Image 1 (cartoon, helix red, strand yellow):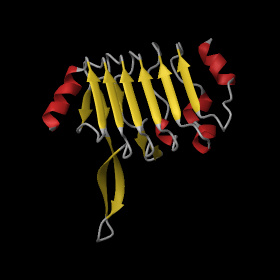
Image 2: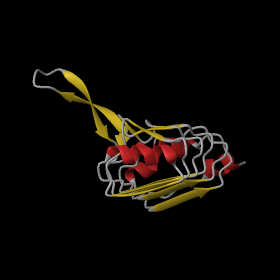
Image 3: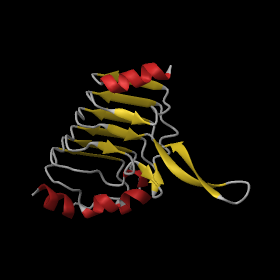
Length: 173
């Protein structure tokens, strides 16, 4: 029922804030997965909360204007990586990222591989941080979370009830 309802929802291109809470579907509707209208639009704040059946996230890396992202209570999500940034895009304007009550989240790949030309015109892979503009990172109640290869750069950090992430931050200093 939730999937059918969201499938017919056509968000306007000038939408700036979008929050979905209590979604019971296993996958995102086609418009959300493709994120076509959002890609060209003004969406700068996205909240996805309380998705107990959802197995994976859409390609959020395509949201070029996104400044604030909040992911909360998604027990089936175990890894974050390509959906946050890959060859389809990167959240280069993201300033605030919150992970909350993601008890089964084990791994967050904080870098992405980008092909770059070397001086001899050979391509090599470089790991770049997904969120180069990040100013605020909040991690709450994510006890299994490990950030691979390392925590991202951020001006402000707040980590609570997330022992592995806390340990990584202590080791970073």
